[in-house]
Amino acid sequence: MSTTDDLARLAAVIESRKPANGGDPEKSYVARLLHKGPDTFLKKIGEEATEAVMAAKDADHGGDPQKLINEIADLWFHSMIALAHYNLSPADVVAELVRREGLSGLEEKAMRKVLQREAAAGPEAG
Image (cartoon, rainbow, N blue to C red; front, side, top):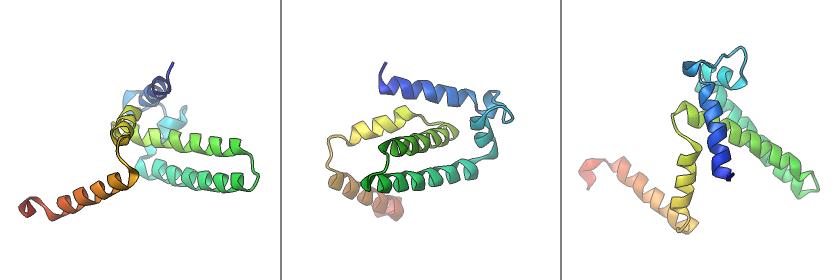
């Protein structure tokens, strides 16, 4: 089984826990986060991102690298909850990473800035 298959399987479990799909907030952590809404799971993403940074800093100074894996797993998990809420999937993220694969990071960032400026300028600018 591939990593993409694993992510798709986990995403399907998260999807099944949506309150609209019968997920019970009393019995499921995922259903509870989705039931409470974006402020709740977005706060968790921020917390997990901070914890991942702290675990990486600790690993730089002899800390257990497994803690970094654990925190990144928490970050990915809560990010997958956000994707599900917005009717997106890990496959959408993987597709974007694949799209970027042939671009240098600097080129990709410059292109995003150009597109953002064009979008901000509106249709009359072009």
